[in-house]
Image (tube, rainbow, N blue to C red):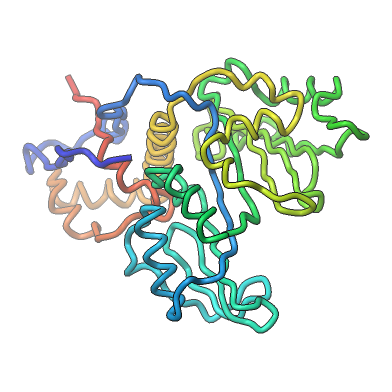
Length: 332
């Protein structure tokens, strides 16, 4: 997602305005430049892990350059060594919001391992280039998550998943896989239906993504299959055709033919996360800000200068570009 060329600047128009009502200040978000163009792919990659043997004597700089040039990852200054190892590797580097690198250890035979999370996968601009690199440098995919989003729950939801489970829609030639439902019991936190198990190398998650992000009324549902290289080799072709591998994971997922736009998914996630952040701020600090506004006789700028600080809340880390595309709806 690209940031806007005209970021909205939030500046008070009247520093001595009367003390505003808290609800009147709550922004109604408008997504700037939201695209209505649909992509041809109804699925996307939401997690990628791979192991590779470095093709250079100085391994770490080589891998850094791959992550920057092939995967389009940025903010190298936030890639920080950790004191912990990872899954048998003796060294680990945390890649900021993107995931981690692990290396070192006699049993690992000079390999390096990379875990790229949803934030990292979202900034990849050319999966064809990723496929070519993976094949040329003989990188081995150890995990990949393939996802489909139904933003309005028009074709899939938890109830439909349970119905298909009862009909045997997730059986793949053998006995039906084990399943479990995590129910929010109406709290608005969101339900999750799990089918399968990581031990087998294939796990399906159907969950209420919008509610998970903090919007209790959101209908947004995500269908996601996690594949691991246990008893199977995951080809790099999956980078170019995630919908084919997702639809082929279970008979019940053959419905995946509707188009979707990855940009709209990211924009929706940013908007929901922002709204949840505003709600939490009002709950935790709203009264204190109200008192400060009274002390400063409605001077919002005087209040902000005392409490604002640089940085991005954890909830919005990884959505920096999307934040620039949000703006409050103009007040009449």
